[in-house]
Length: 382
Image 1 (cartoon, one colour):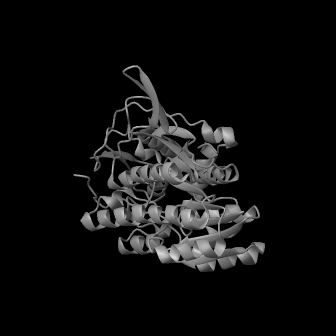
Image 2 (cartoon, helix red, strand yellow):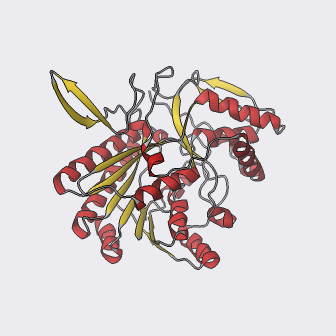
Image 3 (cartoon, one colour):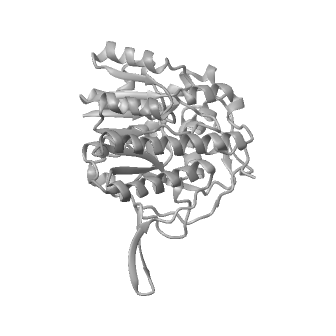
């Protein structure tokens, strides 16, 4: 297949390029380098340096004799994006090219405006490019479990059947985003559903939980192939941040009481989920939604796991609770249905003691590069 990956330089995008390439598919990677620029501007760069996308593609080709076609540009520029579609005519497009951070979207008005512009216009352009060049092209878009919020009912897999005044119908599951970033992801889903109903295109929306991990089998071939590893408040997910804080001798910072519960997954499982979705595409005129997670944990449970593993390795980990900078429920019901991807063939990698110990070992190797000022930037929702 010809696979177009938007956001190919990112934490998820780059290992996805390698995953598909390793399995014999023609990969076209596109990125604007937003994340590199933003992390440099905000002084929260990756734990280890990463060559740029063009250089990494050259390393991959040298090691495997497999070529990844790289294009640097902004998908909010429609002429740029449509030219890529016309040149390569992809069978599937994997859309990671969004501003991916809730805290970034809440810094100030300008970052909020950028998040809206980048995320919504990028998705709109992708949909139009598919319609104009190849309506059979399968759109695989990375959503987020954060679209649902924390409702006091079970979270179904994307859809909910409702009975009202004796009549029944099926609707997108009610969503109540917790940040402007998450709000744009809700709007992404609504936009996809509108154009699917209107034009009969096909799409899979992956409602992904927070991802943790440093590498995949493909990136382990050479250190230069590793994806970004952010551990900061803005771009780093909570488990990545906790491990790095533990190695740095910095207290694990739990927001509020730590009872906030989410569904997590290993970076390797993101690769599986996207690949399985591409190999078994949705039908024409179908918006297929999968909840993409493997294990639910509360923030406090994660901190306890990191402390136990770190103490065993001699790090003497300290845990502290700080005032929650976000507006969110800390005590809430959370029961998520997530069977669809397992039915497609997902084989989960669970958060074992061995996984945590390997995590510590790699982060410790780069401990001299840890920037403690990046752990907490003081971004508040209120």
